[in-house]
Amino acid sequence: MMKKRILSLVGVLLTTTTIFAQTPIIGEWITVDDATEEQKSVVRIYQADNGKYYGDIIQLFEPNAETAVCKECEGPEHNQPIIGLTIIRDMQLKEGELRGGKVLDPDNGKFYYAKIYLKDGNLILRGSLDKAGLLGRSQTWLPKK
Image 1: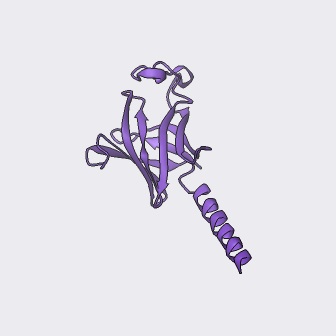
Image 2: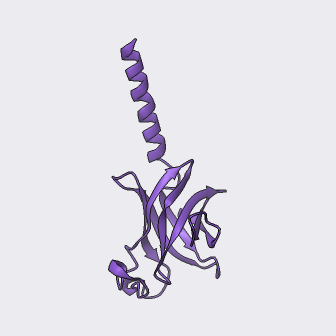
């Protein structure tokens, strides 16, 4: 009887871990500027060994992208190449959404509270000044195919 309970518990844990590891938010997304509607970059979202989610810019759609740096950023990101820059940080998966972390806007160098979720196959990133998400803006990112 005890052996069955242990095996059942192990099964549930493995299934839960697999579900979280395969969240559809993980992958490559084309960022779209909410003001101009232009495609700006490709961000790869992944889960790190610490269980949190991050996103790195892996491609820019602009001339001279390979030399672009984050001039407006402060701290360790100042003048760092934009390609390779981690813009989504310390997100946690809760109820199908990524929450609790921050997003960096390389255009102005500022960090914002972030919430990320899927809607109609697209990714919605809500960046805000407040944790509740009331004072901010949203962008719709497209899946990279």
